[in-house]
Length: 201
Image (cartoon, rainbow, N blue to C red; front, side, top):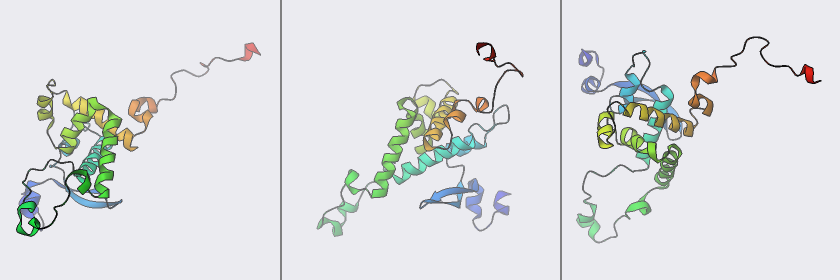
């Protein structure tokens, strides 16, 4: 049915969870079509807990996707293919492109700094799960196995890490991140509970 109802790209729309989302493109936010099934964060965003709430909220999802975009712009993903440029006849007579940081663009270097700053902000205890899930698109079950965590503990740890990441990016304020209920609470006392200084005057 999904393929039958699809538009110009029925195969992709059948096998992907396509949604329109505002993403940062060349310094400005634009509506783009994204595959929400590609990232574990998209899966967690659609799943509900026993209270009907998403496993991660919109702020946590935005922070994780921002880290992933910076990670990809920083070219930190491991290479899975061989580099054949140096073996090509046209490249044997000239100097090859420099390897490592010397061959990166200014944008990639700035993105690397932003990634390292974000990971430093959440701390070494939480940065690993952000790299696994947000950047390497590893599922929570695999992340738990790799780190010898108890089952179903990865969700809570990831939520804490994403909250710290959202606070670093300015998506979430310190008060809201500490306690969203307390941010809406004014005081506990009834009328006239506050002590007066009249007797000291």
